[in-house]
Length: 594
Image 1: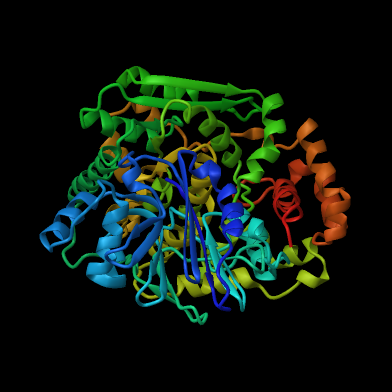
Image 2: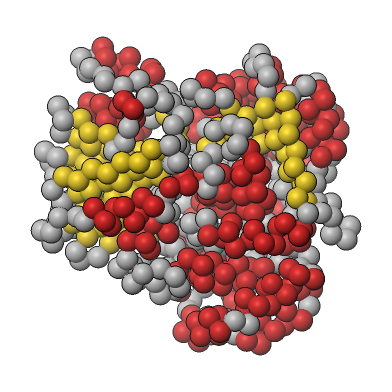
């Protein structure tokens, strides 16, 4: 829901409306319904609106409350806003709108910066406090909504994507060596505050940021996820009942908090199929579902229609499915890359982009199954890690890292050959207190860090590129907090996601529950052949790539010579990783103003 941007000047000069306009223009696809700008002293806000809650002009943004001396831009959805509104009204606050945006303003005035801890939902928020001359910003607990920023001695800027910051100019566009190491070794996950560019940073999930006009910036972590057992042990049946109740509540609150129809992205896997079943269980009528499939490559299927069709038949949803031939995928790849706030190697990024294009013509909001595998232990590498020996880092790295540090050093040129930043990061994160076992530590790291900059970011970017809001019930923070207390061995039973499978049994078709674990398939970006291989060759052989000088040519040639022999531990194409990064830099950075 929406795109936000802004600028706070430190040098006594007023912000320029033209700068905010350029940033807003690069956010237009996130919010096609309305546009707004607000300038007050050293502060300027910009906003692009996707109208989902309170469709009237009363919820226009930037929202200014003259009486309270506050202004705000907000991207997301607050699912408990009606309860908070009632509480604030009882405290004497008067409201001029009916949506969740104004509730945040009043909550900030009433509870101060700790108001964020009362919000249940997905959000990126910036509030200008006129009286205190202070900018306050916050990002939701699971990082579902993005918050990028750039700071110099003269000003601070923020936006929902990197492209808006680049459009404003004045960004250091040099490659961040730490970000590059993460990009090529940690499945394109670059944890906050880093990005691939030195001049762009991002606010970490579960954190707030405060900034004054003299440039003093402070961040605070307001949410800590515990992965420890409860004081009173629970039986398997108790866990199933508790998770079922929490998941049902998460699905229903993401359905009811909207003034527009809500659909479901139905992949044919357990997670999205279970969402359909729970919505039907809640009595939803005329449910809209959407599926996409691609061409097979070799033995790998490009669609999961046989499973999604079974769910559609069971629940009689109003279903639409799309089959996209490879001849249509390749021409759209650069367009999808243009809408990636950061370079994303996941094959399903392009799939989500093409699916969202079509779905957005029918609905504005969809529910999607991201997060279930990370929260409930569904991936094949979890039991592999658990059965391995050695330190936490060794067990994790052997089954997750895309490249060893030594291979990274072979892949990049001398200026980028620094220390093993990814190993240092993982070692530190896995050593944090508040997790009982190795798997607890891994799952918490995945949920709070890896998922944020992999599937969650992909879904937000690719759906919002078409003005489509994706809601992710499996990342409801109350559900996540509950699930993290569950013994990990209970999650890994039944081949993973045991509790979800128990909940689904009898509700959705058995064939969907008992099928092998699937992934949103797009085989052409895994088995790189034909036109796709030539496309990647052209990118990596281009003058721009050679001039940039990031990759060692011998390493590039090795991958181009035999792409089917070079896969990551997560079964991704190493060639696509390089080509995607270079293409993203060419499309988004090389064309940006200085």
